[in-house]
Length: 116
Length: 115
Image 1 (cartoon, rainbow over the protein chains, first blue to last red):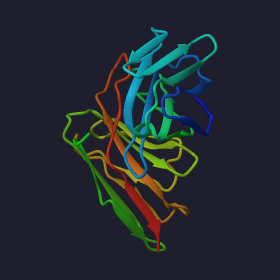
Image 2: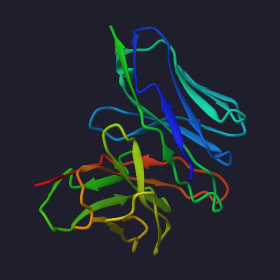
Image 3: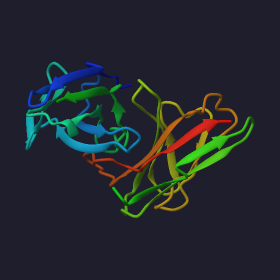
Image 4: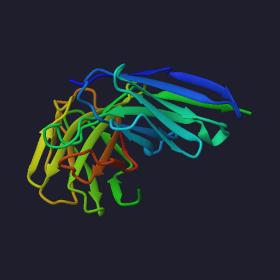
């Protein structure tokens, strides 16, 4: 089955700096890669996702890049703010009926701390 | 994602007891999922359902059971066979895409502990 590895497990940055979280996946058939943000004790919230037909996607201060050849994808957060402090999870999935019906395999999470 | 409601928020299980966690959604989503979250291990898939009256085992289904009698409901039973049930349980739903994945949205979770 799919295996997703995520690094680093913890990341501390100064406010205003950039943060980068990296994930690798094992199944070359995976074609959908969402990122979730989870604040302490709360639900994971989808912040951005990318499909395998594009190499990069941006949404304001957040961007995700995908390298299908190397089977890795990364989350980039620019101009970090204290409210960005949370746990971030990457995930991978194959699409459609033959892909197992939307099943997500998650990485183990990155605790991001933005210090003042 | 106010359209997915999990209850209760906290649940305590006694030795040998089965407990049922509720998950209801009003998003008209076909697919629903149950995940278990343990510290440092991310989210692991327990069961998922793509359509009413059908469900499949995920990666860690042993000791759990589910039903999908209605589109909006996907309850999870933690049986006495699950020897380490203490965890945060998250329910999610998505539109079902036959050709491409649809985003999953989560409920607020149920925290289960052993008495």
